[in-house]
Image (tube, rainbow, N blue to C red; front, side, top):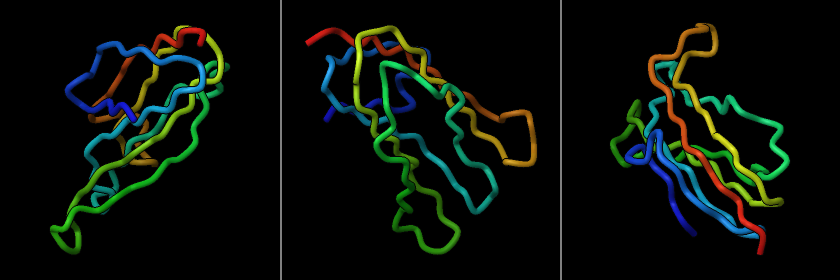
Length: 104
């Protein structure tokens, strides 16, 4: 499964209809900061999983936020995520990647 991470911020990737891919971003939810998917309701992509895996650093350590997407229909989609506290409207960081979903 292809993986998209912070090194591909503002970049682009391709998938074919029926493919799955993973987006993973560093996160430390114990600080209140979590990644929030901003672009939802896509017709071409569907979120299959949204999970957090803590690192082995112990209590209070950060980890990785992971989304698994399924490409359902051809199209051009810009995935946008914001790192912010749920009670604060302004993000401290943003992530964006353009996904081109090709027909199979």
